[in-house]
Length: 75
Image (cartoon, rainbow, N blue to C red; front, side, top):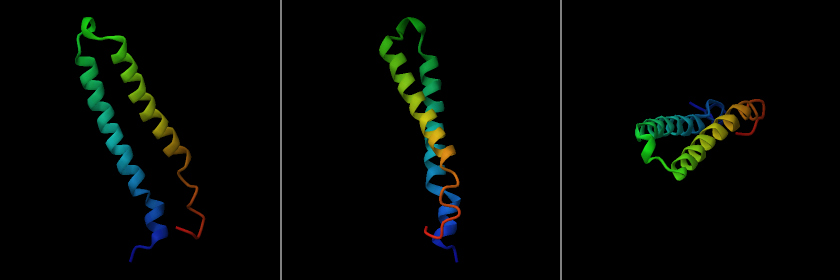
């Protein structure tokens, strides 16, 4: 049987969230770069920056917190 500690070490939910965010970021990139340059406004650039910064920030947070709970006995 899978214990709570083992389940926590696999980090399933953060991986699913990271996969979803990566998929949405790729979809947004596809959408953003398909807009002709004459139709892009400053607001589109701000949206692109916010979404990209969110993805990069989450990826950084996820990578830095990888093994914090690996040696603890608590799940």
